[in-house]
Image (cartoon, rainbow, N blue to C red; front, side, top):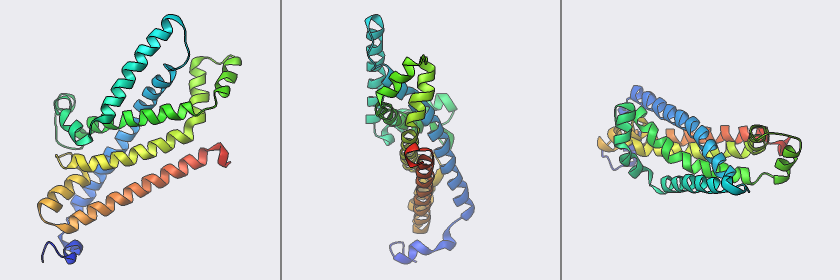
Length: 234
């Protein structure tokens, strides 16, 4: 059967389904672990960016500006580096951290470092969209900084934060496919080695459709979760 014919995409007997399920799980696990880590780190970075832009006086203002400049610069730098370059750039760090540059675990540092700055900016924007009168009202009622962060910033922006996590998670799914081309495992690696490398168009098609399905499910869960907790829809 020719590899350039339409029929070559539908030779499902040429698919090793055990490998398919193993690589699908690797993609899902990489995505879930990275998304959870990115959500935590992104919220922390976004909170720092938001809080250090608030009006302060004296030495606090100077330190706030310094912290904001440093964090903002790091976020902008890592957002600007294409993922495929970043993953290569981080190979020594990855080797030192996890002991390997091959496999799903080795892909996690690059996935997290590349996506966290992206999500941090979305978190900062979500916090900025909160009516400042709500924050002032909480302060007038004697709420401390921790209470304002937990009960005002996070609670009021939760639908936007979930929507941001959804977008970021879908981006991470795409990153896992790119990471697969240099041995990170998952469907990207399977499609590259067993599909492209072995001239097996069916494997490439199956991997592509599976990634589309994973993205659709992730989007559906994110949209429904944000809708469920959005007070404007209740």
